[in-house]
Amino acid sequence: MAHSFEDQLKALETIVKALEEGELPLDQAMNQYQEGMKIAKDAAKKLDEAKVILKEMLDTDEPVPFDDSTIE
Image 1 (tube, rainbow, N blue to C red):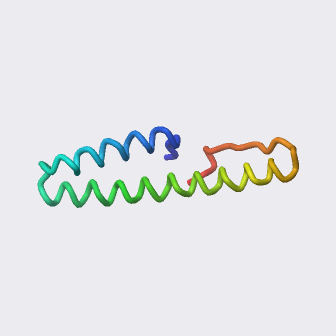
Image 2: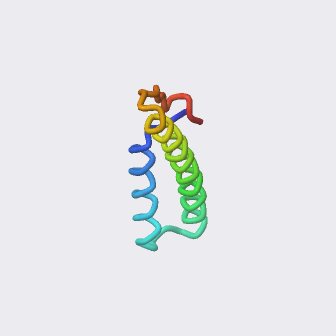
Image 3: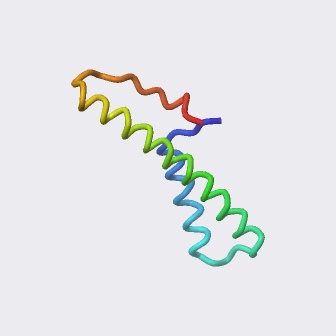
């Protein structure tokens, strides 16, 4: 179930806002934190893979296909 990078950022923003408000019960806050960390890890992986592709494009001056649906 791959989500777009933009969807991941929106989800992280929602989680951060909920945590910053400080009104969640501890169990919910911990679950939200864990979910946020998973999303952040996946988003960072997408960014890293995009950097590799961009570097290859810059090095070769050739377009490189990017299909984020293959990123887990």
